[in-house]
Image (cartoon, rainbow, N blue to C red; front, side, top):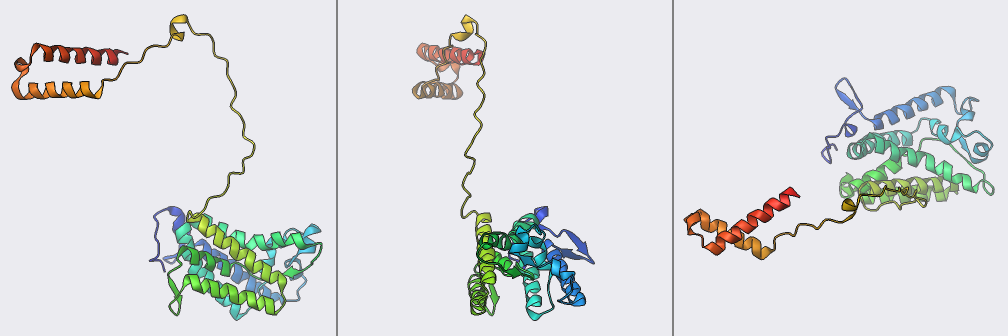
Length: 281
């Protein structure tokens, strides 16, 4: 997929190399997720240590704010988890090559943190928890915005594949009545869609600087009388006068200075004096 786009900036190149293979930020995200999967499998799903990691909107408001970040580190082994890791490696790497590793992490980090952060608003009426990796589908949505016409699955273009996947996951959450998951899907993917379109320049953010500092006024000292009087500006030569001078110069080039009439010599001398006067000013 590297044939899509290949900028020369350092931010679009691998962060490091291992045995000749480039390691991107997308690979580091997958490594962290895979390590969390191994730890989750070793400790077991009911381990007291893992109980401190999942997201709970009530517990976050009680002060356990680390759950806004650690909920994605509880990953039991599954086929779905493996597919998500492949999506991050394949499509995340191409998004990173296009946007650079900083903006890639901005896309991934926003789609990871925004859903649990915004869902805090419904805590007074609705308490829920959430655990497991998130962000693979959002990265694919960002890829689909950057490369909408690229075939990805069975010659299905990225644009329509993203629409189908978001719709399918939404229907799965709706069938299970998992409203937290449904809202998280839409928040994460709406952010990824908007982020990618913004980076492509399809829209700009409004200027929210309502208060601007006014420049300070300075009192200048009085100038001498001769400096307070404005000097007349040199009058530029009119187009007609410039054309006459050009014609005289052409005549000199062809026939010599002796071929000029007294009137032409006077006009040329006046133009020379005017030019010297402007240079002196």
